[in-house]
Length: 246
Length: 356
Image 1 (tube, rainbow over the protein chains, first blue to last red):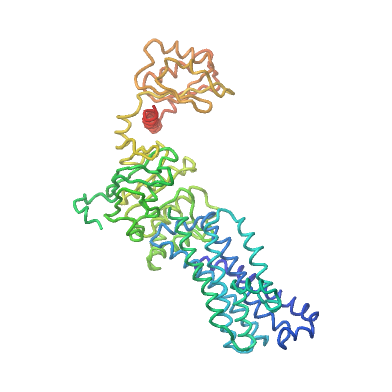
Image 2: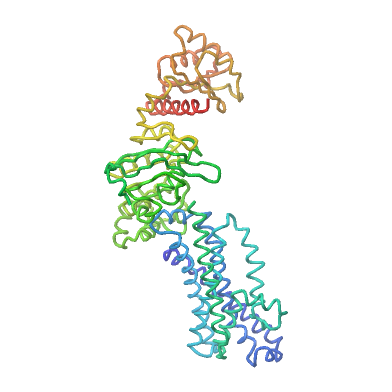
């Protein structure tokens, strides 16, 4: 797996790091100017770029984690069928799934480190310790998305189901999880829905760590992320076993 | 584990009794008994859907059995799957190579899954690349390799941890004849080196060439068992003759074939006649052949049994025969082909008996 990573990482790292930075530059500079002084009202005084940057970091962790949990996993169970070969070795279903999820999370950790460094250099992140915490939050966010999506992927025969996941879940979440505007601006029902998904928690933690504001409800946020991650992992092991060992 | 079988022959590596696998309402494997002994080349022969692959999966510990007993190295795969898999090399019917890695990396990564240390994996990988004539492709990507090379790489990969048993599920399906023979040679070398090999196939010639012992499976059951030679003697028809339809004809009235054999199998463009006795009675050969040829039938292959051959010769010489595409059956009835056809006839007859 590591050998695969060595071969692949230039491509994945490039897109994973650069894309959110482009978004950040575009939105921060363009939209930031447009929003102008009004931003202060919702951002608590900081510039719009500073407001959305740590949120974009969590959001890109979601994107990368979800993407890696979709096509590459489906390919290994259905297309190139490497997993069929792997379960014929002493490894068991839990080894394979935990390994796959850990690998995705590891990949995100790389990307997050780069992102955090950029935020630290540009002064958006206020302290190295906060930046370190943000990397941890990105890892947890990726875990919370990757694990349940891996569980979904191992049940699929084609990639059609991914359109549903990405259009109806991942893309809307990027907008309605407090990334570009506070969750409190949403109708109450949407707020509840948003807090049920992982990204809102990742965004809240990431932003607080970047801006150095007090961490509120930290237990709630961490628990939500871990619940999704651990629950997803258990589901992935169960569903993988069901598909492969019949 | 294994205690109830302390009396078991030490030489039986795999032992199944009443082994059954049910999917929903369908029995994929229905109470089969067999034993694979240390060092032998054992085959499961049968048509697609006979239950061969399911049996292989149960042995490999990736498919829990529904009932019956199954012991591999004296252990139950349901309880000791990981340990058993550590001593078995599996080659799947469909390619499962990692297309993102090079030829050699495929072996290296796989060795890690067996918990081997890196230096021994590297040594073993180079040994295997040499053995399977892949050394010069070691650094290449897998994707552009030919089908035969991919299959050899799959087998090499399955041998990385020096397993006691190598399991091959239809290893030569989809390969060209030359690639098949290369693979057969490699497998025979492995067997001589002491590896126990279990293979499934639906090719008679493959079973005949490779297996010391085989079981014939059909519709989830074992219908015959023995060495290829025994199976031929016990079950095969004495004569097999293939007749080709005239060009452009897809079928022919079977009445034409009366008196030729006991039974016919109609295939695209040709018909195969099986007979258990010498039905081509002396003297009628030429007349029969003439009648066949008047309907445009041409002789294809036949076993080299004297009378079938004589018939085919007569057919080839007959005035109505299209001389341009007339085939000399003698030249085609090689030793290998003959036995494959006879074994094939035997298996077909077994199926026939079961169905009627």
